[in-house]
Image (cartoon, rainbow, N blue to C red):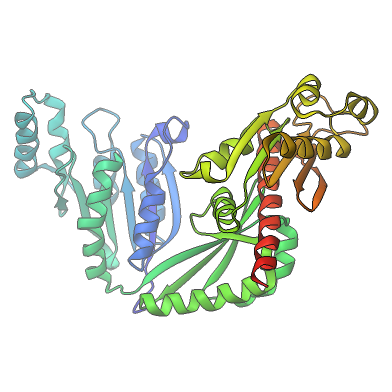
Length: 424
């Protein structure tokens, strides 16, 4: 790459700080800049306060060649971005007649009367390059400052910001800084291993590899391994990513279930189709979540036959044939009951495979011997019935999600073994 350029994102709006609006702009800007070979080093959020906006801009310009601000360009009293930028850069504001006429035309085209306060959106800092906004009234701005730095201000509305960024801002930044190449990422997904164990397995690669770099991101029931590469061409980037991915796959094997946007249920569905297997699910603590995930895919009727949410003991007995004596002796949350649930589900559904899931999701119901998070997941097949015990440590929703993830992973691993047996 010709030159490393540091960029910083500055999102403006008190609603962002209060959590009333989710900041999706930063993610979009970061991804778009990376694709253009510009790396984002910092991100800041500041409320609708002129002095604090100016302070955030001042700090950003001490460490970044590019500062991209979004928000605060509207017509109301709390839209202060232009004023703050002008004050911080020592620029005067002037009424841009071309911008004002554009705003008037937009209102006229929609048969609306323009309010007097919309004229504020035509107050532009001296020396700015105006970025037309065909999707709204607020224009964007590109301002060149000392030492070759550039400040960009764009509307906060995503539908206005996104085309302005890709069609106007990024081409100008590329030309100004002579940036070529791109920054791209690939994500490998693993389950059935803890983050610490995964780090021990590939930690040396993480420490040694500098391009691509490796980052681990933990989510309930799965871990993302994100590989990020800087390259002058797409072919070179793919080669570097492929080489590193091969090394990671050699270490992790079946712990890896997918890549990029692939979901575990998609992988399981594909394996069920490949092996021509059908499945049914009996759920207690997960409340139908596994069935939902399996059937949330088009074409799932080819392999998913039936599901039962057997939350009560009565349902386990009446619908699945779990013996009352078994529940009385071991409790509903136990390995014997999970085994019986899976076997009973397979029998009544007439499927190749069946899952049985029972546990204590919380926040109540736990005991010293059976704590919150204790979960049993069984799978029944032509080879018999097996069961695994788990002890999850999250809240109710997280425990349900982790149980559904582990159930799908048990199904995935069983199908991988079957496919391997068929191929050999």
